[in-house]
Image (tube, rainbow, N blue to C red; front, side, top):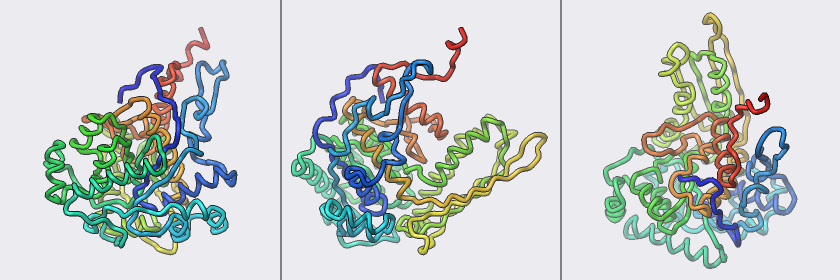
Length: 439
């Protein structure tokens, strides 16, 4: 991820195609939201690219432009949407079924949403056991399925007259997998695809197709996907930007906000119990133990990295961290994340914090999808290949260079993101040292 100061950024001319894997609650909320914003029906709340500002220079300079005015990003009016899904429903029907958005709003957006119909998906129920659908590709092997995707990507770009594309995995969480010998290099990976090897998940087929097509790829789920040696080599070879993984929305967002605060004040932690109830398709998928294992690994890693128990054993050694997810259909997309946090302070005296976050999962995820689409496109136009660690801000399990631990502190992540933008535009990085004001 080389970032040159004052880098040459190709202009965001023409249309940007956003290709979504999965046309469920998250994707339809994202697409409908963009259409609503374009029509002046709503504001892009939650989107850093649309509403965020960035300080430049000294505090006394009063230079605080909007990010979208400071850096050349694609305009919302230039976005074109494509999707794959195991169900044939249009974005309009899928949005109505998801039930995230009010019916009146969906009806106002009926025309553009009806135009978005999903292509047949690459799907294997052994990787997502609680789902089944009929809008599914067939082929002689996984490499053949990848080639079908590559052809569809090229056809979508041609048909919609797109100048550039990005692909975002917004589909369900696959079963837990570990890196296998067939992931070692591209040759063994492609042979495994020919052999229909079980270590090649559907998400990897999409990532392979995207990278082969020169399309940046973001993984919004915790699956082992693009983060295997073969696909990372392919990304670097093709000069393609990638990022992931697992959109940081509800409970984990709260953890990455609160845990840095506890650590900054040197308050100790005995335990952090987290439970979620949700009733959308994501909740149904995560009701399967193998898919939950993938999500659990993503959620559990956050506190360890932020609190650093090896550095602060008196405060954080052997703290108990429990995560539960319960599928409860009546709740729909309105997830409830409940946390009980047992902390201790001066002289070891015990205290508690309790959080009850009544959130809307897809409402929190949709602006993440928008920002990732625009920032990945920016990275690609700037020649920033491989892992985009500066986009860690958006993920529960940020991808990093081999051997490098991820940064989970949301405030450090935001500083990293904004300093990357400053560097791209030749501006001084901001460290918040502030000594120059007192010289």
